[in-house]
Image 1 (tube, rainbow, N blue to C red):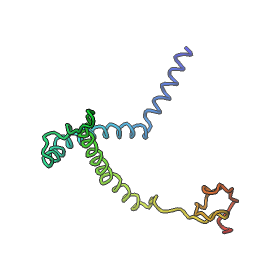
Image 2: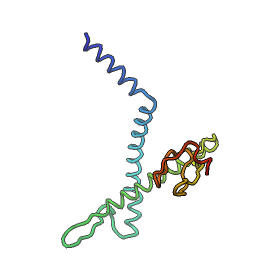
Image 3: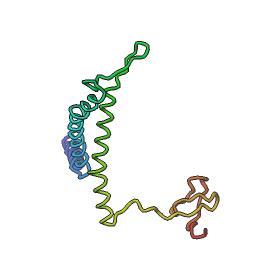
Image 4: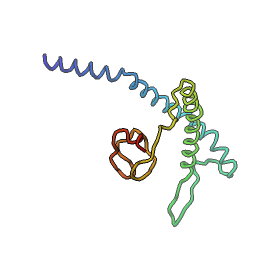
Length: 149
């Protein structure tokens, strides 16, 4: 009976972990990211690389390669990957990061505001006034050290 009770407790703990909002959000984000990557890969392979191939006069960019001393270097897949990476990064930046940063600014949650700094009393490097030790010279700092400066 002790084994069954242990299993129940473990299952309850697992269930509470799996149903946390951040765990579900992560699972949804990974799934959507995989689907988005598949779509972007298809767009790159079927739209952009034929355009690149038309400019270079090659039919299939993924087969582009060169040889040095009998060793073949297939750089066509790297070109496809680089174009895919660029499209994914640009899409995420313009459709996720920029709108979220705008929303944060409108809500007064701007995290880009720099924290107040003051010079370290020993090495005069600008450091955060909340510091207890200088990151540059590792000098321990007194409580309220920035007010003395």
